[in-house]
Image (cartoon, rainbow, N blue to C red; front, side, top):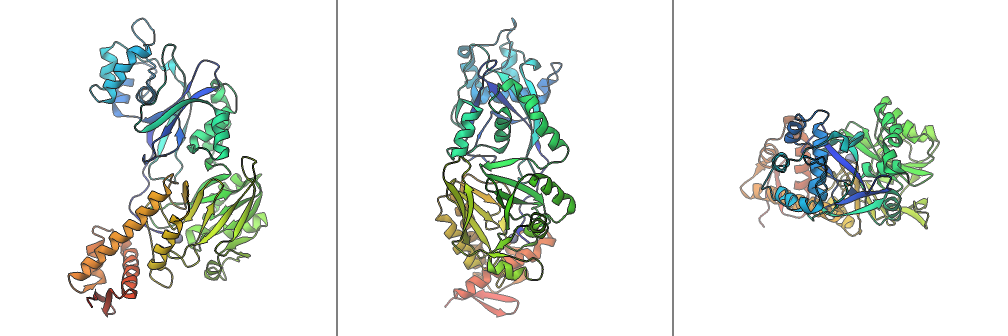
Length: 503
Ligand SMILES: [Zn+2]
């Protein structure tokens, strides 16, 4: 029980990305910063790239060996960095000087990419790109990509430069230096980029295809992706039956060694065994629960027994799980969970518990001050608005208060149990509060027009809602009515009907 759905998972879109080496044999690659407001990985460092367009597929058909992914990789690289892997009639690469006005024309949409190539008699060659492998966004995000990664080398006479827009900057960096900054908490790096930089491992970039092979083989065999949104924090999206659109619950493995496992929700044996494969060779300190809902607890007991570690939760969660799952250690507001030495080896790090009732009575969030991470459980879902049941299970007044408490932490990254982490915690929390204010306003307006039954309120407030979700809409409305009644702004006419309290 977690969310009122707004949108579901869609199949991944085809995309392409380029690891551009500064020169042959170089250890430096061009890394770009994605603008904070971008829906996909906004605020993270990544490699240039983007979606494959239908025009890329069409252009690919004109040259043997070229695919839509090749064309998309070359086009995106040109748009984002000004580097164009194309050849003139004599086989030479165009110079930076020649490319500058062409890029401007393309970016201001005065010309399409195929027309630009045709007009300047430029052609693409598949051998400019070396295919590394493809990575599919794991099923935690509604926006997912099947991205083909390619290696390329900066052509002589060209320069790579980011024009501010969707990207905010770009730089030639070695894999080690980007990862060292990441470990120190000085930047945010997109998880596939982390995996690729780790695979480069201080070697020349040309060696990446063979160095990445073991990971690609493991993924092809069904292993869970290595998803590192922050050093020392591995996100593990596990199939867990929640409310649609949620198909997965993000567990988090936090800490170097041993680590805490937060919310392992998988109840299916097959999914649990993928989790055990991932945990092989890792030591656990304990299994931590944000709250007691079924899509967060499926693998709790089995993990605690298998690894001989305690289950930790808030007393209200322990109470809700009584007779089902034994909680060995209670966590109260303000308690610290020690995480040992920080990932960069400097000092220690820890989680601090924040009791955030509203969605569930014993709900806990966790603040990690070293990297400024906020683990929000089901306080925020990045897929939909969170279900707030009426008391005693939930409480809208408490939920709003809990959201406001979360706003007081200077978080850089918000890590939810459902959906993609966000590099804009303040924005996400403010949006959640604004959404509730808007819903309350709608409820008040409906009651101002006259007494309303629950069925009428559902119809007015949740137009077009699928019938199977009606009971969740009713719970949200019940919670809203309860808050208004408590504040003296609404009264019950009878058990099924409410009106505004004008007095
Ligand atoms: Zn929940």
